[in-house]
Length: 277
Image (cartoon, rainbow, N blue to C red; front, side, top):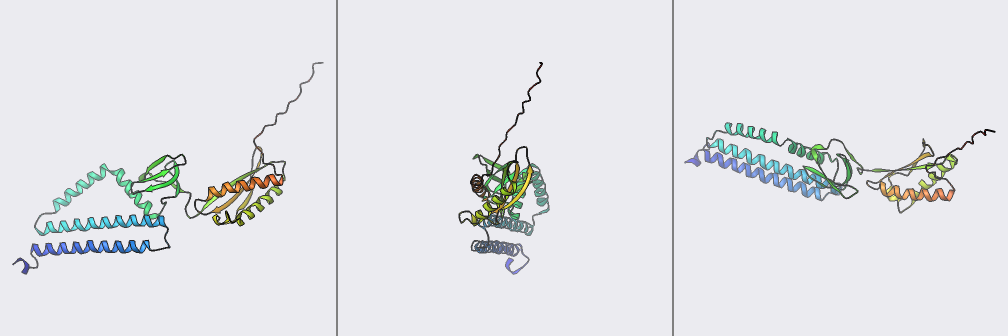
C-alpha cells in the first residue's frame, strides 16, 4: 500500500502540506503575539507603532507567499512534474514584470525603507520633493503631504532622496529682532535676555520648551538695523506657536523699554546748487 511506503508521493505530499500548514500557523501566531506585545507597550510612540504594524503585516504576507510557493514546488516535484522549466519561465516572467514596473518596485522599496528607518511618520511636518506640509497618509508606494494652502501632494516614495523632518524629536524656534543703529545695543540685549528668562518660566508656554531661550547677537549688520537672534529649543512641532508668542513678548518689552525697532527707510540729501550771481 502507498501508506506503507514512506517514499510514496502521497506520503511526501501529506508531509509537505503538513509542514506548510504548521509554518503558516506559526507565522500567524508569532505575528499576533508581536502585535499584541507592541500595542501594550508604553515606550513606543503611537506613530511608530503604526509603522511597525505595517512592517509586520508585510513580513507576514511575504512569509505566507514564500511558504505556499515552496510547498507547491515540492508537490509538483513529488508527482514527477519537472519544475526546472517552471522556474525558468517564472524567472523570465519576473524579469519582464520587473523591467516593466521598475518605478513601482522602486516606490515599494523606498516606502519599506522609510518605515524601517522611521524617517517620518503620520503627523510630521516634512519637506520632500519640493513640497512642504503635514504627512496625512503613508503607504509603501507614496507619501501624502498636505501643505499650508490645503493642497494634497502625493509624493512617490521612490522619489524621496532628501527629506527634511521639521518635527523629529525636537524643533527650534528662531526670532530675529532688528535694533536701530542709534539705539543702545547692550540695553537691547539685556531686555531680550530678561524676556527669555520670563518666557521660560511662564506656565502657559514653559512646558513647550526643551531649553530656555538663548540670545545671540549682533548676528548681522544690515542696511538699517543690527540683527539680534533669539533661539529656543522646543517640543516637536511647537516651534511656530512658541515663535509667535515670543514675538509678542519681545514687541511689548521693546515698546515698554523704549527700544526702537527700525523699518526700511531712505534718507535723501539735497545739496543746493551754486548761484550764477
